[in-house]
Length: 164
Image (tube, rainbow, N blue to C red):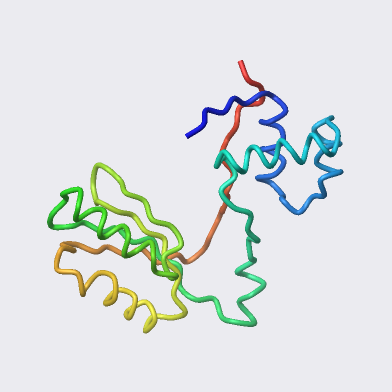
């Protein structure tokens, strides 16, 4: 992997982009005090280096709820029976491939994994639990916490204001 160096302009671009990627290149360039062609090149370099993984739309669950239903959001702790590298990798790959799993964290100490999952309703969650947890002989313990209210949701990575 190619080594990349960040300067203050790169940090500013990353900060602006992680808050709102819908801004035009001209707006982004003006905010960073650089020319539009330079801005485009810098953003491409940051993307090519893997610092910008992807650009997505964050949907409003509250506004979608009247149209498609609230669904169930759950934080699920998973403990495996065998924690060898192969077993951990196999479980991680299986849950990461499932669309109902929004986030997957391998954690320590405590459970082996913490997942954030979304299901349409309780029968859908039951199907998910059977598909991902019950059907796996290596899953020892499952503990699910169902969200009753989301107080905060963010995607931003804290960045330093300036490079040293």
